[in-house]
Image 1 (cartoon, helix red, strand yellow):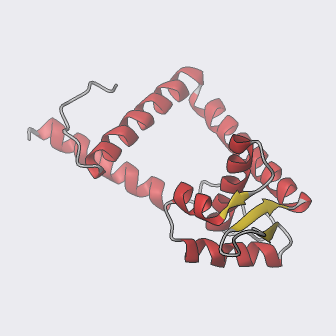
Image 2 (image 1 turned 180 degrees about the vertical axis):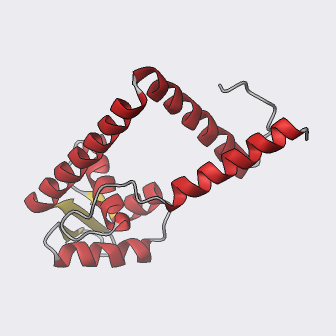
Image 3 (image 1 turned 180 degrees about the horizontal axis):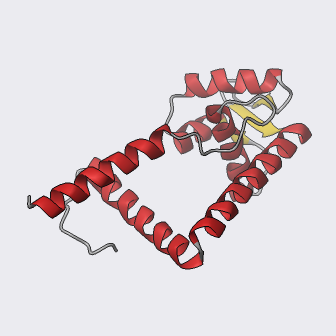
Length: 160
């Protein structure tokens, strides 16, 4: 690797490390951890995708790539705060459906708006053109690392 490439690699590594450490996600909403918020948003996304008001625990588990027992623990905490409800399938008691309560729907709306406001602030800071370029570059970086984690061939793709 030449010196310029090595310098760029170091800058990218430092940037990724700083982004990982920064707490840029919205402040806690309704006392939920970031993991619990991901569960709430997964429930909301799953409900919209399936045009139903409930989603199975196993589907949430697949969406978040977390084991069902871990999801169950998060669901218990969310249920205790009145944000979700559990329903057993009457035909198969092993199947558990989850739905957002009215309060859970409100919390996800508030969190989504807080996140949108944060992103709008970033766009105002960077400008439209640089923000669009950042989005393209981050998607290209995600694609590269995703392919790498899947064991795919990594021929340069010129940012595609």
